[in-house]
Amino acid sequence: MLTSVLQLQELMKEVESEDPIDFADLPFEEDDLRLLTANHICQMAAALDNFSEEDRHLTLLAVAAKLVLENMVLHIRLIRQHGQDVELDLATILQNMRSKRPK
Image 1 (cartoon, rainbow, N blue to C red):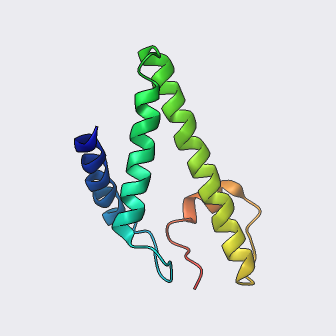
Image 2: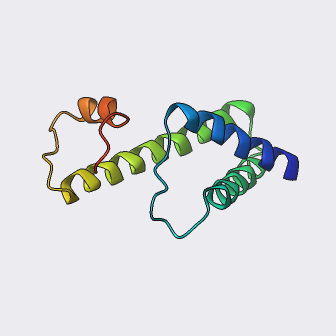
Image 3: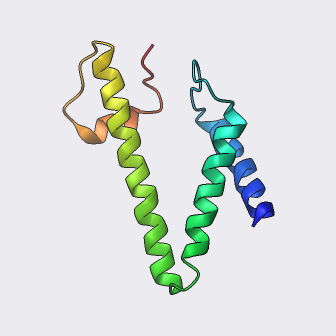
């Protein structure tokens, strides 16, 4: 599993090149957080070994959807925390999450 963890960590970096994560002011190293996350995801995937291919796919989609939702909630909280108006159109918020970063 170690190789797949490291492969996932590298893939995470590649994905981030298009949409960088702002690690500023965090008391952790970026690669340590990626490694911790990659390890957790690989453990979750390994736990799905007894699932059918369809159930495994659906479960991973549900995990991804939950993470996108959590990210959107955190993004909205940051916008509000910085005194900016939150647009009421959720589709617009989701579409603009990448371009609108609180300062």
